[in-house]
Image (cartoon, rainbow, N blue to C red; front, side, top):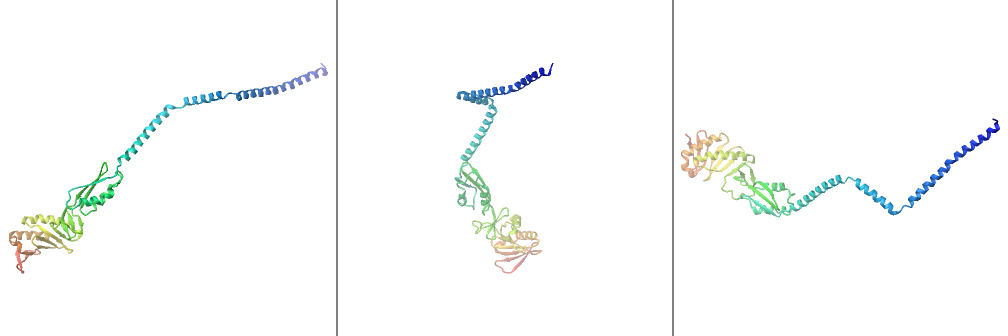
Length: 303
């Protein structure tokens, strides 16, 4: 085969090659036409169809939503919200303002009306939030109050129970000593004239109380009752009796001296008790008596 016969074949193949290369352009054009057709279809979709698709999507979302767990949580939340709301409104309803104050107790020195008047500031206060400790402290600071018990009584009642101090003796003419050795100072001492009188330093009140109880039981054996008891700064003891006469015991061996006086008084002196002005028991063998009618001193032996 000659070169001239081969050359046309080559050109034919070359054309076919270029012809096949131009085919994709035609296909691309068809694809663009298809896309244009699809977009035209979408654009031409009716509003009813679009609404249907939206509703359908919402229905599917509602079906897929976990309703059971959510309803359980909502019911629990609603229950506790109802309980809390009821508790708040119930507490407000129960918290009635204090409308009445009751003061109770067995009183001899405390004036009930005065105490109630002092507590009027508590009226119209909150029943639950009112501070009872302040009222209790205020009452126990009063002179004649030993203890105070303050309680709430629904609705709106504040009850105060007072335990009055039991005075054992007057103290330096300005107060009294309680049965527990507590010294209470007063501007005056109403109704205490029948009590024995103590005279001494404040720090000696407990000692004088215990000594009084001890000596009074011993003197009762000779039918004597202590009318006054004095303890000086130097530590000297002096007992006063009804009939305005005194017994000096000094500072040392006071218990032995008291026993010696009781022995002498029980033997003889009790017969002339109305004439006694003073007795001095600071002797080792007896006592010295000062008589009201006789100014001279008479020595009386305890033997």
